Length: 127
Image (cartoon, rainbow, N blue to C red):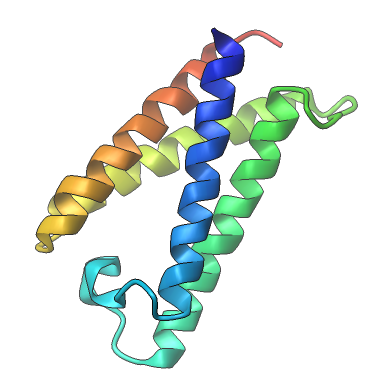
């Protein structure tokens, strides 16, 4: 069961990475994300690049936690990283729920709740 949850979590993060790339290239309108704070191309690049890099770091930390990548003796760092990811997704869920954009509130909040739950389950797992 845990391998399935790991794959779902990783798959969802890959999906989020892909969505951010699509937003960056204008395939998905930027008006449905970031509570409409993106006012120009410079802001779009800044926000989306930040989101992409953060998610990529999360992806690597999760790969370390599930032991797909070797962490060496840094298991404590990896475990702390998983709880930071959980906190990020909880905060992101609250921000999405506070958004005035209905799509962000319904779709992205639901998505980040799922990510938070999966990350919580991963964090509770013993190494």
